[in-house]
Amino acid sequence: MDVEGRRMKFEDLEAWKEARSTVREIYVLTRHEPLASDFGLTRQVQRSAVSAMSNIAEGFERSGSAEKLNFYNIARASAGETRSLLYVVEDSYPEFEETCRDLRNKSIGVGRKITGLINSYRKRTTNK
Image 1 (cartoon, rainbow, N blue to C red):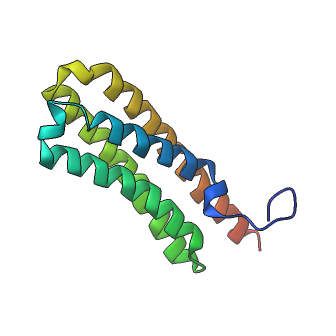
Image 2: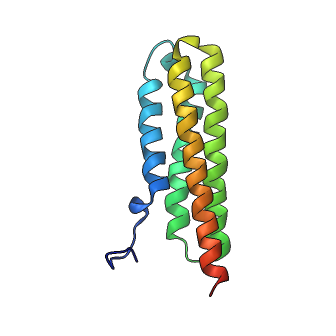
């Protein structure tokens, strides 16, 4: 329940909101030429960002502790993969250096928020 007494949804999670924003910006980036023609790289960075967002949602919807934490950990790893792939984009297409730097910082923020979800969930379940 949130502070207003309503049932929380994954869409209420700051981690999910920030991951969604990152996905949106990565899709905008990957529509620009010449990067748009690099199908393998664009698809991989898109998939990793979408994976972070989707695994946050899937973890939130799981009821089992082990499953929930597993999906959150996959989401955090996907945020790291996204960050790594953005170095490949920057190294291959230096004209996107600033955008890649900004998106890496957003990916770091997503990872930190996911870590917060993990720590918060562990704290809540340990104190029961």
